[in-house]
Length: 243
Image (tube, rainbow, N blue to C red; front, side):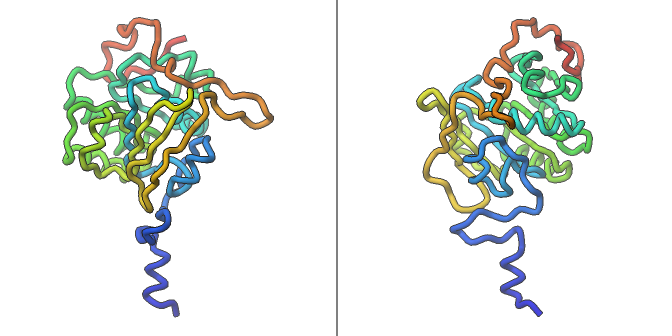
């Protein structure tokens, strides 16, 4: 009969300070081996909140999520965009393998509406991924989103300003993004497990796809559409239908 110590060692919520945490829910592969190796579960956490803190908008914060979003779309799951700062660029999404029929855009006029929409999307079983751009969010509100993410068991990502790094968060993963030698430097500020003292450097171009062919580019332009934002206005849950 196993001892109590042995049982505790196998518990997914307990880990040694020198190792990454074990997770009950496998992560969603990021498409970047160097990043997957540093994330508990081997990828983006599901059933938990992730915060991404870009140095500035359009630095590549969506490119690092591209492969995971494409996986979710291929599985027939919806991806909700809650109050994105720019209208998503449909051709770039399609080129990245993200089916437009799987994208739902939620346009709001108030921060409280954005938080409500994010909580509803996270807590439902309709979405495989929820991306949100909250403003002025406090710890209690973050905690509500974390609990909703646990219920919905989906990929839950909040994009927040770099100043948020000074604030406590219930998110299980927090990553700061900066440019480095034409690529991206990812600093893991928080994860379940031992801290990471060095940044993870990602190339400026996406990794090669299976068969040696380069995958479609998924970069800052994905949210920099020349189309008018009025195309998506007028509906709380307008589905992306740009050509």
